[in-house]
Length: 265
Image (tube, rainbow, N blue to C red):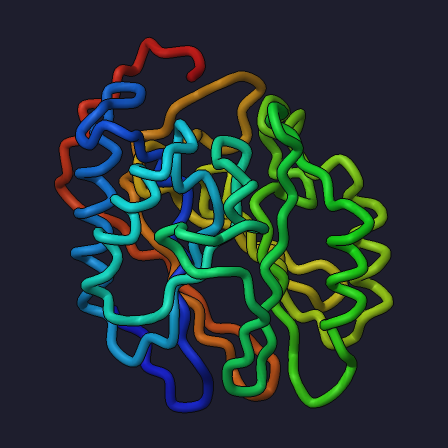
């Protein structure tokens, strides 16, 4: 099914592609470039898309070449691509985009919505943190006015139920959640990082994550565990009244060549 947009704007979330400088290099057995191409091929069937939200770990090695690959692969979608850094990315480019193949950070105004792109990366660490400047960025731009607000960051701000993944959570989530509670305009939070499809409602705010474009992590596990579910993307319709319609679209019959015995990466 492809979601129509009679009363809203449509974005696609693409996440955790883990590309390398050398195209075709494998991670946990998966050719991450090929799987991203397959997911983008599926996404090309979507109509009336306003933009792409790439929610981190675009790259596995932080190389400019890997970001150029990503840009080239998603270009056929024909819509603006907005990105945030993940723990495997080089977050320097998010703040210094000169001569970088992906677009610079911006406040996205679309329909009745404002989308804010956040940097939750602690260089060299797997867990995340929103600096004072990032929290101030939310405070400045999440106006309680005519627009609803969607916040986009890489690290999960609430536990996902897998204890090993939740050691890599946003480490100042309490401050973040308190800020959200004081901002009536904030309707949803979108994250990557966990390679899982999750949607949870807390006090009127939707917390949403999406599958990776390569391998998936098994939900509700105590230690590193790979899932057999296919790569995919998330479709989001941000409705004029502040509601959200969303679904995950996955590849079918795709051979990932996952190495099941791997216990980390």
